[in-house]
Image (cartoon, rainbow, N blue to C red; front, side, top):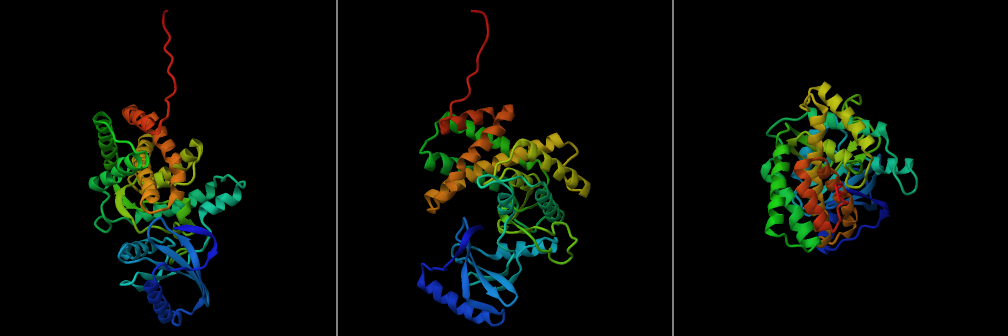
Length: 367
């Protein structure tokens, strides 16, 4: 869910869908005290969903427009309830036309954690805000402590491999226009085997899958007890949640799709998360160095996946704005691969694909 810079008029490509929406809005506007003329676009999304904002007697509400032939809203409803039960501030479903894909939600506001850091920085840079990151850590731990097996889909080997396949299928073949040689494909497959094996050795918890400042909303109490962990930040874009490696969401938070921090800040927050998670009884292990390796390898999985997704969004879905952030992911991939000797072949392959000349190595010896 990507907040827009200013409210925009709502337009419809399909007149029949507009008519269905107008009829639905008419039926719910009275019971929910909505001001129909105030309807405006609230945000866009990387998927086929979009979000509208509308005024109500007491504040504002959000309407999700999710064409049912393209989007399944059941996971959104399920995960929203799980988050609320965990004490997090997640949207409450007030009305839902499941057959047509229209949903009325409580409004968590329009000010994201990412925007708060932007305001604290200069016009062109973001300022790392440790208190906000610690609030995000609180919310993440509350979410993970609520975990139960068999509730959400498993983030298993099959899903990990499907995600990794996005990199060769979309970034390499479609975006770069490169056909891998047999040797290159062997190198890539061997690296994928190592990445999957490392990630699967970590215990499973609830995984948001896009837990980052762009999806965390400022202000307001949590559902229920305001003293509950995670009470300050609202959480959005959680419909793809799964049950998988505990290393994933902290990697997502600190190796952001849209922000890059220096290693000092990343380590600081990750250590604080690990200490707090360990104290809470979450399965993060007793060795921070080993946990941090797990976070980096899980981050590598995510970065390879997202590089593929951003290429797909551009080439298939006509959303080129995402590809502008692709260099950030290539930088993340190279940085992680450079730290682990078993990932050096993947580093060389990525540099070949990207046309990056590796730094020269000078050999000293007798002439």
